[in-house]
Length: 479
Ligand code: ADP
Ligand code: GLC
Image: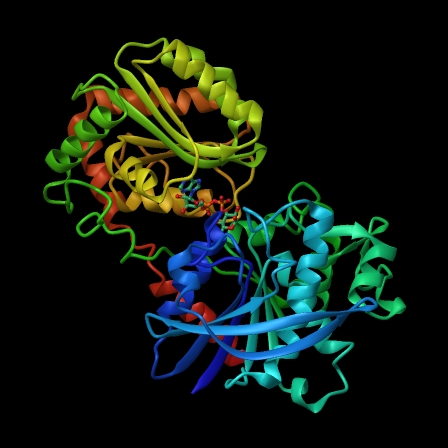
């Protein structure tokens, strides 16, 4: 039996702010239980729903030294669908209404978390063969294991994998403050190890000290090794390219299943997708107080409202798009205020055409995937992207920019061969995006049979964990 411990800052169903949680929660479940014992360790945030908090049982307590202070660590545990979940408890660090706060607080919070995880390992009922760390929040785990704790026999045979879900967020902060908080030796705060551009950088630490680095699509693995896509870490990634692997994310096909989804009123499969999706659309129009029209082209967006997701392109064309006949747009998201306000403003001006839900709702997200005709994702960069996979699964045609995982998963429509699963554009340019939307609308309005066959091709495309799972297994085996 191979033992793997995932360490991450979020995982479905316990706590989620984005795709990282989907991936940690679903990949861990997918491993064959006869071959692998996969467990997960997370922070126990005060903002985690009460129903999960109640399930946890305390299994260990100890202190870790952080700077000059001793900090309490509680380790709690529960089982969820056959997976053991551990939680690191500390009411000071994990307080507040959100998992993340200010960056300076977060760097200390996750230095604490990483050290607590490393020190918890000998105290668990489970010694992993591999610790699989996700994103900068866990970047210090391999660093601690190979340096401060490197002379302890216990850690010597445990391998580490570090997965990059988004290179933009690196956990950067003042060298002296991080050195002070982490207690890591001074020689590590140099350009060979943790230092980058005059600051300390947790993600760089994860890259340097782990045995293998992965990222979440093949295209993104190439992009992050270039100056345009590497957010300053391209050089270090080129240096360590021999241990960098791009493995495409999969989707939890049980949770995202148009035939069983408990959030949507009308279930469907590819046989009855046209009729049932139309009923879902009608019911969403009613719920969101949009005019109940059948043949209107309904465009959806569910997203963190950040620059990454291409909202400045949307800003350029929104008025023009909404001025057309026979269109509706349904948006769900939170994030930067200027984008939230943009949607509030246009929803006010075009109440019959735009519904904008500013907030976070799993239920509304599923309803949008199941009801819209097309889904817009014009990202500036996209490590993998799960929303376009959800759209494909629900027969909603994605319109995407050709970057990272979007390029790898959405096959552009070819009108001569009648192939493809969506519409795409290459450059980060509002006119190109508009042309892609217009091409989609043309097919929707004038070539219904082709539109329908594209929906079905998307639903048939397999983005479950099936194929990527083998790549993770190979990697673990190699280690
Ligand atoms: P990222 O992780 O960069 O935000 P992904 O496409 O990988 O992008 O994953 C986003 C996930 O978060 C999807 O599951 C999407 O449905 C969900 N999501 C984003 N914003 C919201 C929201 N406001 N309400 C509900 N779900 C959301
Ligand atoms: C990040 C990326 C997104 C990816 C997700 C899960 O949040 O922005 O593209 O799908 O992680 O790996």
